[in-house]
Image (tube, rainbow over all chains, first blue to last red):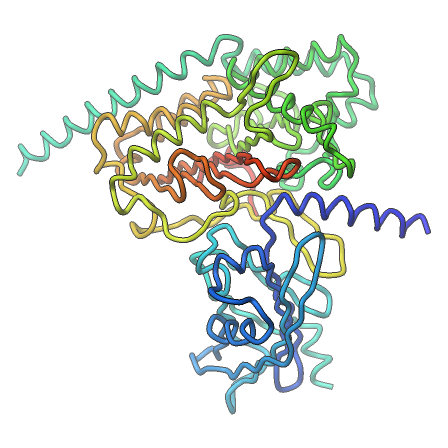
Length: 164
Length: 365
């Protein structure tokens, strides 16, 4: 109980503090046997500087497809599908959150690709995109202007699990 | 060709001497109480440590390692706890001793700014309905390593809107990372008016106004905070972590594109404004700490690779207004953000980094 109270207090404090900060984006990567799932959370306060027009679910999905890509190591393009978009709130900030499915081209390994994302960073210079593993939130890397490309590899632990 | 080269060289020399002299004039106003002399600082640190109890020394002393060094923030202490010695917990004698240490390490301007930024925090106490820790007493002191004349050590002073990170005996002179902020921008306390970052915002605003006539000075994009500040890492559903300098060492822009106007394009009067703006930051630590840094920033080689960029309003009267000095080593930013406690107003964040000498060049990944 004491722990829950402490957590609640912490989130209340953190919300106030993060209102102080320009919030960042996060991409959570989960490796499947033949494809990759990515949850993309983008804060609306920063997105409004980068995305023209209405920030509704339909527009956001299309917008992400313009600003996110995945490539095989040889440059071959992966297919990206938007599975769902929802609104979310976290620590006093509103977000748009999308579930993406990333499918490698035939013959390309699903465990290694280059993620390209400039959905906010093409406009907001201090914005950072955190890319983490969905399984254990391990940091894969971060993107900040002008960097928009990040090599993503399946962690060793999930490599074994996926092979089963 | 050789004659041309000689003329160019002479012109650089004149510019550099002129720029250095101008900056020196500004800095001289800021060295009254402390020179930043290592010997004096070590003596003051030893005297301070000698007054503390074991428990207090336990909070003051930290290993000189990455985890301790990067543990500074511009977030309130309730969110990013500083596990160092809280200045608000010291009695009068120990407070005086701590102040003597700060006076030895900082210039008069640096010490005054330390006081005024904390006064600004005090002005927010009545508005701190969530107890996130705006309070002049919530500023902290730590010593990383052992104060010495030979081996590397650090003096850290910081709280919500201030982080002095001074490194001694490092590979390079270490005055950075140095973070400044203030909310409110202007306020009155006990009948006296304050504007803590007046020197820095004034110098950066004059510089932005002067360079705005050069098209390339305007940076592309939008700025909602300093670019190389502390970063909060978050994953939905979990408490965020970080809020400290976990991004260090940082990557910086390269090439000539979108970095602002090149220093060499500026007229001498405009170049003097660059020196003034630099001095408004470098004049905060003691002069012995920053002397070599200023010389490095104003050297002809450094100025040949220095750019001035801005975004938003040059008078810094609008949210998102931003000014930056970006050279081979120097990285100085100032951003205008929406105020937190009183959202109808604005507040400043400012950051000085040295691309080579943050933490005295002693801290790796």
